[in-house]
Length: 515
Image (cartoon, rainbow, N blue to C red; front, top):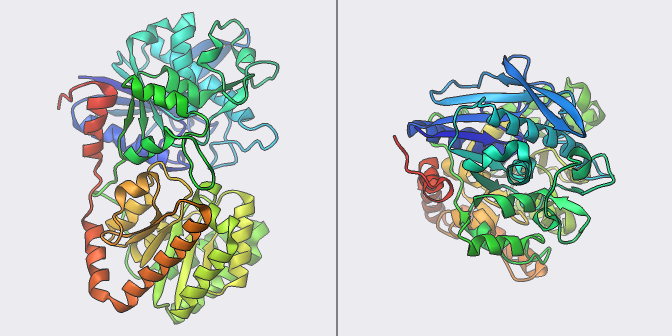
């Protein structure tokens, strides 16, 4: 039996530990591994809140800042107990909950300041736990995004963790744009402050643009035994230089990625989607679940500042319950530049979309929270446009209803490493209109399972988006047989974790499954 350790900032297998798609991956891949007869431990930070319901496993003493830091390891109960998978959290008072999903911190004046500190403590604690045998004898350690790449640096250059060199360590890139860049020295949240005696070559850690800084995303790419991107097209994209907004590629790290590819260490394997034992919404509850979510948010102290807006949204939704629209378009996403750059940078395009929907008695529903400037844009748009329903919060019931009852799902992402929303919508037989980039290009076939827009220039992309949107409406209202065929084709698509994890074993883990 092979033993794996997954190290991540998120794990949706335990309650309250997800901010995005990475949490889904860290929940689902261990299940596939366990089904093959292997064992998986998953460890994430406690964020000062996930450990109280856990079982204390012991303390871990590590040297940081020329001091001793003592961390506590807890085994925690998952949402669903599954044979072969064990879940852990590491607790230390300085590993704090952030303001983003109670996980990440937003430090606008010094990006990654607080997160660097807490993930440095976390990674060092994990390294010590592995050395002490807390997770058993491991064959593979699977790291996720920059938050965990410090383990590779410790394995390579820290004498206390030389034992990690006998374990295969693989590194998944979920979002290359977020790189964890911090000063090398002369700052509390710097590498040399936390590891004052660590001897390492600067080229192993240095950022190309800010040469006095460490780039933790680059560390993962440079030092891992295998590097994984979450779709084949995203792998191809990130080996080319970025030219925003026309093209988002390697974000300054294309040379490292090209080197990993030449060395046979870079692999693009598409994420999967669950098709069994899924949480299913009840049909016909879209507007009722919207109202329930709004009432729940109105009772939360943190939402008081937008109480007037929530009430305004509720009033619009009650009108829809009395007179349902003929067409529902929707999106569920974090409100960021990646997801909605086209709408924020070119609001006239978004207004045109809403006007076109108004002509056919259609609405656009958007659920999400995120960057304040995006939330404010969409709140104002909702006040200005009666057929734009912006639910500015998070509700699992409402999300499930949106995926079930939408007619056309929108994903105008500037870039998309893989994407899960398109798979969830297609699973319900609802076509997706998406930008032809990354994993969206790998999962949607234009006019067969959905709709894709693109273009070589920014204006060309905007124009094509409008053309394709109009065409999708035409097919829906005037070509019902073709729309039905696209729906059934979308419903029939399968992006299974079983197939993805076959690729993991072959390319990332260099193992044969024993099950």
